Length: 393
Image (cartoon, rainbow, N blue to C red):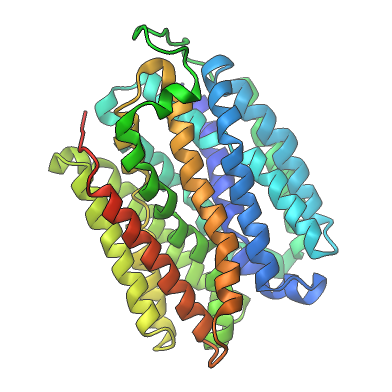
């Protein structure tokens, strides 16, 4: 499975890149095609929404067709076309269309790898493998920071996107050649026919889904979009400076994903790890809300801590996955992923309204409102999750 996993890993690096690269391009897209922060918030939200809505058909395809064809065709055709549309964009709505296509193309990659992990490797190792996949995948976040700023300055953002379009198509082709499908699982429970409704009939999942919906949104939303306008408006940062900040955040996300992975086995609890991390992330957001204009270094430190603490996704995924029988694995993990990525998409679109509705008393006021918005949602998700049943493998 090694060569195929490496191909899926490269696809996930691209997925992380595409969900995060708009922050660095904020100044140039504003100058050249008139795309403001609210336009880019919508584009980013549409990426996440398209990605999330695809999780239902992707889950069915993983269980019926396997990860190879599911991931390869979507990445090559939809992802490649989306990057090409972005390179040709002359108006904000072109970016919206491009991000929808890219979101569809990226939608199966991580879940294809998780499907293989769940079918081929031991259940106890799932969180560690999932965390490692996510940690290495955050190289895409790093690539979407200072390296993207350098490439856009050196080659132009359009030529850079054309290069990414070619890389996306080539990655999809490599998946088709190298990813191997594990044997299909049989329904041995005697209950249900392996549909999404069977997943929803598992009571334990319902107390996990609300936190899954809000957990990733603060780190992904701020890193992927709002950190660019925030540092531009409040601290007067340029593209290179924004690239440095997003690079630090991306590195923190990678560290967080790797650290979260083995903690459930080390500490003997998933629920405790998840709650502690998410409450810490909420504390970072509340500090940013209280002191949004204190200093660029202080803001970078708090955002980086948020980025690391906000990467509990692999452990939450492992917690939910522990309740799924083998024949529901594809639909189960994609349902969890739909809530996670869908939460980012929905809250990214809503965050645009929060930004617009915030009182314009100072440059930092709209961003303070955003920090408080994400903090309150995260605390609500934690409050519901407190009643979930802990479970380890």
